Image (cartoon, rainbow, N blue to C red; front, side):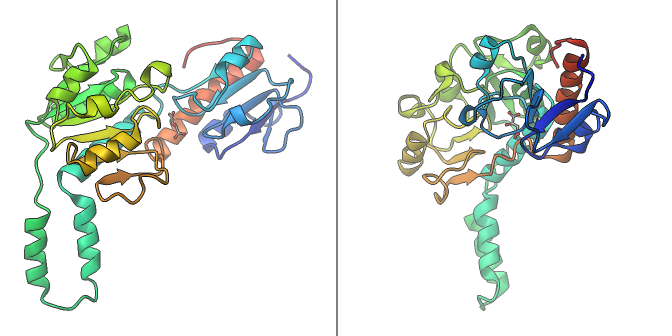
Length: 308
Ligand code: MLT
């Protein structure tokens, strides 16, 4: 252990519950550390920066590590700590919100009501029109397909079952932990295609790796029912967004709900896009920051590497 505080370069805004675990005296934490011992990051893209040779570890206050060159760092012997599950409940809740927004036409209904402001005319008649135009469907008794049965996928499956939905789950590599937390009512599908054919709501919970790039694409989008809702709260690139837009235009898909907006999809009337909000709750930010700060401290002070 050096006879000076460890320098931690912080590249994004990180919750106090994490920073407080790196006390002054033992750690100097800031945005301007010349030769840091570690980097604490949320969404900043570390592929785009040269990581100083002084860095002994990287901590990512989130589950995914796509923004970090994990392979190169491993070759340098630099561990990357993350917070699997730290924000799973936050993501689950946003998936539920996305399903409800789509099923009940909430976004266009809200725009319709906002448009009534100052429009004149009898409000009662407009409300009557809105009730007809935006009538929706209930989630209960519908089938949700969950692709990826990790921490988030299992929570989404469980919540959907509690809402009275049937759940069809697919994951070629389910972990023992996930197998234990997966509700027994979840039927297991043998393929992505089986999920797309049979579910009305399809929610993706896989990391972006070569095997999952465009996992949902022009070929298999055809299998969906026209009233289907596709939800991508995993990673940009897991769905071929161009193909999803074409499916919406061809009425092969009713809604595309997605947490990764980019210029091509922003304005489509049947896209509900959010600014990567899945993990953005106070609770999730606190959890993830605390989880990675603890791992970082144990590693720097004691050389201990443990999974969150
Ligand atoms: C994650 O991978 O858990 C999220 O991307 C976290 C975040 O939004 O920072």
